[in-house]
Amino acid sequence: MQVSQPQPHTDAYLVHHYISGHEKSLELLILKHKSKIYNFIFSKVHNRDVADDIFQDTFIKVIKTLKSGMYNEEGKFLSWVMRISHNLIIDFFRKSNRMPKFEATDDYDVFQFVSDSTPNVENNLIQHQIVNDLQNLITELPEDQKEVLNMRLYRDMSFKEIAEITGVSINTALGRMRYAVINLRKMVEENQILLTS
Image (cartoon, rainbow, N blue to C red; front, side, top):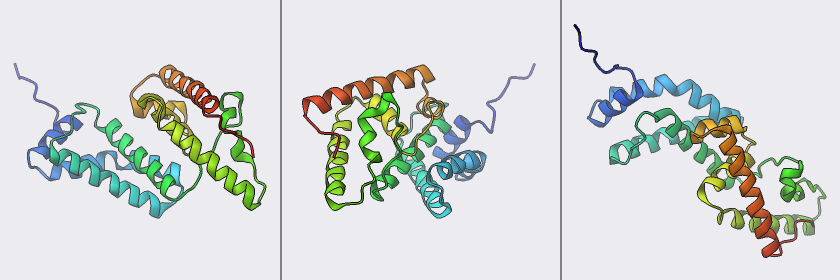
C-alpha cells in the first residue's frame, strides 16, 4: 500500500519549500493566487498603475516576512496575503488623503458630516479637524474593532469580504463593527467632538 505524500502544490508545501531555499516555489504561489489578489486590489483602487504597485508591494512584504522567519500562518497563506494587500490599500488612501465612503444609515450617523459638500474654506477646515479627531479616536479602539471599522470605511468593503480576510464569521464581523460604532459614539461624547460644521 502506497503512503500518501504531501500535496506538492498546496500553499503550505510551497511556502515551506520557498523558505527552504527553493525560489521557484514563490513564483508558483504568486501564479496560483495572482488573479484573486490583483482583482481584489483593483476592485478597491480602480486604477491599474496603483493596483500594480500595491500588488508588487504586497509580495515584497510577503518575501521579507517569509525570509525573516516571521511567517506563522500555517495553512492560511491566501488570507494572510489578502490582509497584507488590504493594509497597503488603506495606507494608499491615507497617504493620498482620499476620504473613504461612509454609509448614511442610522448605524453610521457618527459619520454623516462627511456628506457636507459646502465648498467654503471654513467648512473645509472644520471638516478636516473632525476627520482628524475621529481618526485619533479610531486608533484607541481595540484592534479587532479597529480592523473591521477600517475595512468598512475605506472603499466600503462588504462584511462578507471582511469575514473572509479576517478569518471570522460574518456575524462576528458585524458584531465587531457594532461595538466599534458604539465605542466611537461614547468617545465622541466624552471628548465633546462636534460632528457638524
